[in-house]
Image (cartoon, rainbow, N blue to C red; front, side):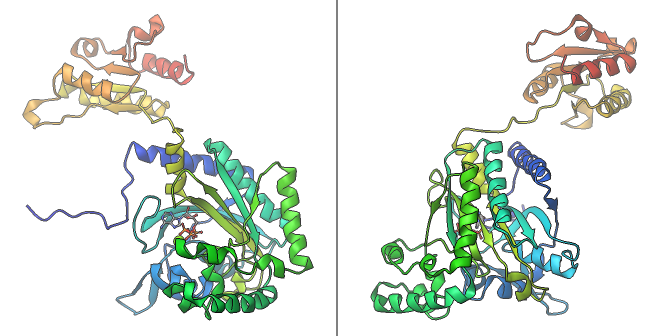
Amino acid sequence: MAEKLTAVKGMNDILPPDSARWEWLEDKVRALMARYAYRNIRTPIVEPTALFVRGLGEVTDIVEKEMYSFEDRLNGEALTLRPENTAGVVRAVAEHSMLYDGGKRLYYMGPMFRHERPQRGRYRQFHQIGAEALGFPGAEVDAELILLADALWKELGLKDVRLELNSLGQPDERRPHRGALISYFETNADQLDEEAKRRLHSNPLRILDTKNPKMQALVEAAPRLIDFLGEASLAHFSSVKAILEANGIAYSINPRLVRGMDYYNLTVFEFITDSLGSQGTICGGGRYDYLIEQIGGKAAPAVGWALGVERVLELIREQGGAADLPVPDAYAIVPEASALPLVLKTLQALRALGVSVQMHAASGAAADGMGSMKSQFKKADASGARFALIFGEAELAQGSVAVKPLRGEKVEAAQAQTLQPLETVALWAHSLRAGV
Ligand code: ATP
Ligand code: MG
């Protein structure tokens, strides 16, 4: 036998029945986004490497060590599998001049790629759902996005998710803070790990984002950016907080919250749970008013967030909530292969009427036929279907189909009877759809 091929490490197959939970989540997201008037955007999974280097910042975890980058074999172009999608959305918005007639509210869902050490809640291909509002400078849109995320947690039945907030101010407020941060870390150079030492002069703010537990105390006592903010930045922050308070959204201020990319300014936030161990951030975002011009577009303010789908689904599982798994309405039992043309014709009609039917299919060699009635009923039962439709010889002889409830439920006399295809089956289908 040939050597067995397996999926790439850290990249998961999403299989039924679990995939139904993904669809359930995606349906909830689509419905909610529509209620907030956010529209779907779909951008390529592969982008020019320069988009992320310029957008996310050279001295970030993602750009330094997590990107899947490669050269196009045919023309040598430097390409990267997207590690996140804000940069791609911004590129698309600029490329298509989407802001010419005002701000845009957008959302996306899809796979992202980061070369990280795989563990619970951390994969190399993972999925994000993101919401981005571009062209809006006001704090009300920062707040709207946070309210949207909060509404999604409620919609999904999530509990124990807390919100942390911070403000990163503006570049001219970050400069003096940067100076203070460098001299603080220089004074405590003996406590810095290798990565922090390397970043001390290139990107000291990133040190605050360290995951090294040995550095937490040091980082905890570092100069706080929030103490360097001017009036306008503080006013923006206050407006966000006032809207959250008016909406009963609890939050805590985390002065060390800086987020993993360089593009943020003013409001940044994370939704965190304690139920998932160290991978507890399920959603993060903030304002990025300078990103569009940084990648060559016309300057415009923007704010957004992205959630990790695997972590959100894991949290739902952890908290005991789950979507109902899909089952067919009916399972078609087919004793004789000779009935198949009529069976498939009847099932087509039923499905067109909205009934979901799983057809029994031969599993052995052609000579074995369709399998015994017993084995077919076993499969019907395992399918979870409410009814078996029996296309038996006797029924077919009189042009009808037998309906047998499989879940011990009481059915109307009319339903339990043998049905005449197709008119009676159609009636049955309608009553089934109506929940009779
Ligand atoms: P972390 O600090 O956990 O590495 P991050 O700051 O790198 O997260 P973002 O880039 O802000 O994460 O992405 C938003 C969300 O996407 C995260 O809050 C998380 O839920 C999810 N996420 C990020 N990286 C991964 C990954 N490798 N596997 C699974 N989910 C991820
Ligand atoms: Mg990360």
